[in-house]
Image (cartoon, rainbow over all chains, first blue to last red; front, side):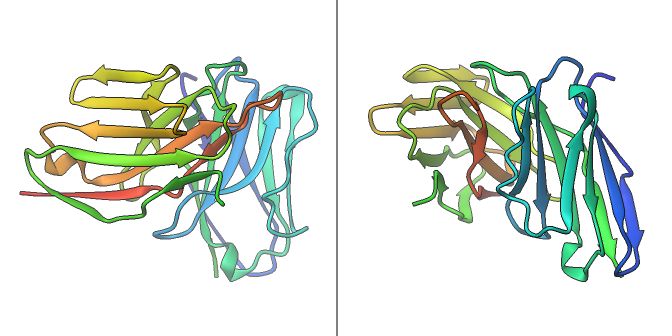
Length: 114
Length: 112
């Protein structure tokens, strides 16, 4: 596809369940970001993958959150034992490496924990 | 000190006026600077990039960069109500990681 694709677009889950959110970056983009955005708030950085380097996990809010990036392409963000405060829009972005590091965002996954 | 700072606003301007959005950054080695626009309920979209000191114009938008002052701005001429959105400044962190750091955004309201 031409852009960053995220799935699902919407996810409603019960408190305590695990969820997986998927991100397909733009082909050839080596960098991939996950952000969380609560209603009316700014972007909250979660994790950053850059090529084969160790990911920057400094933004993950708790050990219930984890992310993988397989084969340098698709990424999955997993939230275990979801809590109501996890409800937010989860945004994925990808970029090239080097100087032109402009990132392009997917449409996001709206997660609602009930 | 935050790595990328923006005034949260709201910045309110009348239709037809110039809107000026400002951003400061802390990493003196940063080389790439971007402005994103985010409408309510939508994802951020890239509207401007700037890499060298000075001005860069694209239609009604002008990005200005002053590396010595660690300052980047976005001017929107002839502001329209459709420009009402949150504007995010993003700066790459120098060094091998090249990670983009976003500011918290400035909310712009253009009133008729």
